[in-house]
Amino acid sequence: MPENRYHHGNLRAALIDATRRLLLDRDPESLSLRQAAREVGVSANAPYRHFEDKDALLGAVAAEGFRALTELIRHAATESDGGRHLEAIGVAYCDFVAREPGLVRVMFGPRLRAAKRHPGLDEAERGTFAELAAAIEGVEPSSSSEDGIRNAVGLWSVMHGYATLRADGAFGFLDHWMLPSAADLVSYFRRVGA
Figure 1 (cartoon, helix red, strand yellow):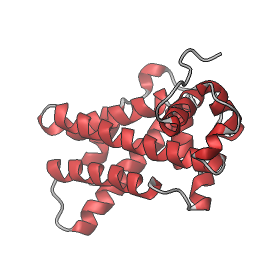
Figure 2 (cartoon, helix red, strand yellow):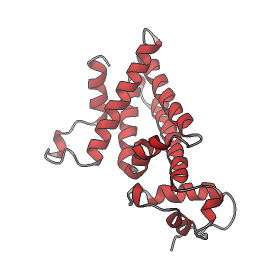
Figure 3 (cartoon, one colour):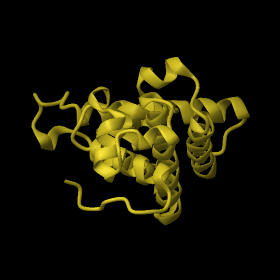
């Protein structure tokens, strides 16, 4: 039985929060609207007032995940020392993936990409990309907007690839001390000329 039962207020937001909590220890494919309803403490039919189906709920959860990631990037970029903004963003990104791997699978997984019917998801993802691109531009100005986009795609790809490989245990054959930190990886990315 969940500790925080829903009594009144915004059921939609409560279901999104409950689903994020459920994703901490469940695979996204095994989730159901019924589980989210149970977590919140409402009837099994209550979620259908806000979400047509499981994909609609997951789309809202993914959009919320991108908004949270955008805030993490913004915070890391503004709170870090001098030229180390990008390294701080890399560390924050890896921490986010390690902390919420189920949410990350929903955000980047193929299930929602195929449906393409999630209001706010594309906008939230674009916001994350724009925040990352602005952080890069603030540290290493590009000669063109195309270069800025390439740099942002490159850095996001490096951070996401490394973070998900680590979270999934892909480097289990290496001693922990042999793995580069996220900051070291971003520094390397910057040196090789993103």
